[in-house]
Amino acid sequence: MIQIFLGPPGTGKTETSIRIVEKYLEKGVPPDRIAYLAFTRRASLEAKHRAMERFNLSSSELPYFRTLHSLAYLQIGILRNQIMNRKNFEEVSQWLKIGTFFGNEQESGPFKDFGYGDKYLELINIARITQIPLKQIYKESPSRHLVTWQNLEYVARGLSHYKKVHSLFDYTDMLEQFVLGGFSPKLEVVIIDEAQDLSSLQWQMVHQIAKKADHVYIAGDDDQAIYRWAGADIDHFINLDGQVHTLSQSFRIPKSHHQLSQRLIKSVFNRRDKQFLPREEEGAVSWYRHSEQVNLSDGEWLLLARTVRGANQLEEEVRSRGYLYDYEGSSSADSKVIQAITIWEKMRDGNKFPVVDIRKVYKLMRVHDQVAYGFKGLQGIEEDGLYGIEDLQESFGLLVDSPWETALGLVSERDSRYIGACLKKGEKLTGKPRVRISTIHRAKGAQAENVCLMTDVSKRSNSRWTSSEQDDEARVFYVGLTRAKQTLHLVHPMHGSGYDLPA
Image (tube, rainbow, N blue to C red; front, side, top):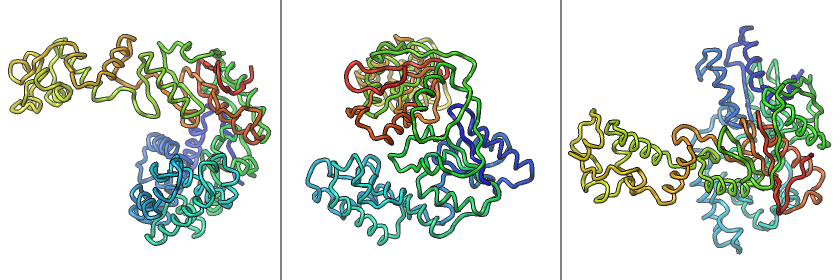
């Protein structure tokens, strides 16, 4: 019988899976007969690293700790050069004469983003992973006004023909080949994580794998299923037969956040009912009319928006307020500039540095103004020596000893003003920024001591959503409400549309 583990937010779903692995290792099951398969690469790598560290195993001893796509690639045995890449998509675009074939600006150059953000490739792929006819996907898509059916059908046929002629595979082809060819390995233990996000095609793959396994565990949380629009088959997970276990204790969510999020999620009609306990701490929930009212001066922060546009607006605001931040994995300040500033200011305090660090500083100095011509390469300098400002002024062309704002003349005025504002706020230039900005979808699985959640939604009002869309939207904001460990700050817009969270 399949064992189903429902993992509400912060209940330790990954840790539970690792304990299952531990149980079977202690029973003598070889690690290469245990599979941990996840929807995302991040989840599979996290589980693999935990297992390697806890059980003193190498990566090669855990060959089946991977994503479903990666497993398909491994089992089918195709070569890396057989996988569609950006160059291939560009060739398809040229071959189909996309640039001249499509008449309006919105429909030009559909392959520029390698499929992401491109409505043609998006619709084609959703049809394939959901196993729903492309015509039906097109008719039901809110993006159908961006493309025409004739052009969509043309691209679908052309793409398929190109791959066949050149013997190439995309990631969905791998899943299809896995299912059609029966490539499932024989395993003793299989753990499927993030199961609520699997598509119909991926579920076919999972069931094939499960048939050849002795013990099957499927973990997920339908309340956090926020990828229906990308092809996730939520109903399959909700209706899955098996022995159900609910992880009952959240190690993240305080009482006040739990109460609010539960009132929201209970509005979802189609879900598995589940009960779990919050932390003993009360936590705090605050409401605002503008994100500028939220004090970001201290602590760890995660700022969440419903849309990319909202996240971009948050970025502009946080930058204008003089805080360092991380936006989708990228720091707001250039690491090379930060390094140079840090080294230079320490040199002004009397510290000496090796040549490798001196070069980082010289690269941001203007010739003739801050460093003499011919000295940016520091020719003739001893590579194993340590040098201070006086040493460099005497022998290696340094012309200044002023603060970094004037000494590093090649730092852009925009960056100089921004970093200067951050320093005035007391922001630490080194280490990870304490403020992170993300969409709710990208933040799934993330957490922070303090969370600021923007409730802005699209121009379409809540009343115009279908019942399934209402469920999907509730799940998205449920994910947003359950990221904070201490304080939750909710910003409802003064103008425009905001999601109606329960009071």
